[in-house]
Length: 238
Image (cartoon, rainbow, N blue to C red; front, top):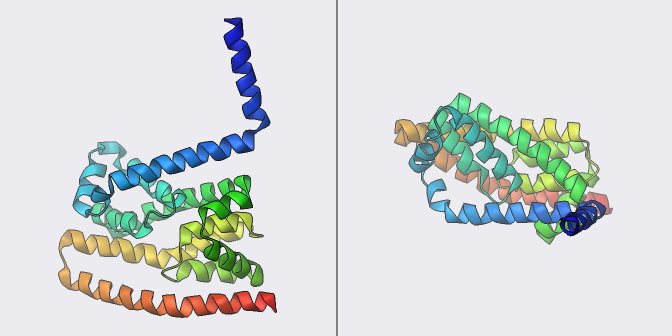
């Protein structure tokens, strides 16, 4: 028994001594596990009816389950946020679905910002592609954080949740990050929940109009957004 306690104490001392490495490994394990589960149940996420059935099966806890799902989507950033937000509109309607998505995103963004701050630059660079990391880091350093954060979170096509990890290691205050990233997200969130609600009520004309409108906005913002971002980053170099 003493030998077991001694070995346990050695392991505990090692984990405390190298707590940053320990936390990093635990985080990577959780991240990888969620990734596995995401691909395993991706067929459900593609179908609003199946998502609704799965979430509502938790009864009184369905809202909590939806919030957790939205938080996970922010932390595991490659899961498309629009899928969860459309599901929110499909299940709870435009207003409540939008509010729940914003709340989940706020909690998730809070977690991501401080996870990133704790784990540091090296870990974030491993998680985010080299090009995106370099571009966003330059852009955040190049101009007013308030304007840049709002702009980045407003335009469609920007990987917003990956960007949250970069904000965590950049010279961006938590207050600026959380306020202006949330304000920038709001239009797209409510557009997604409205779209989900139109699917639920079966308004095909509204669905078609929103789809075409979003496609046009995404194309324009992808082309113009990249050139604007590169222009800001070049100012920093000059």
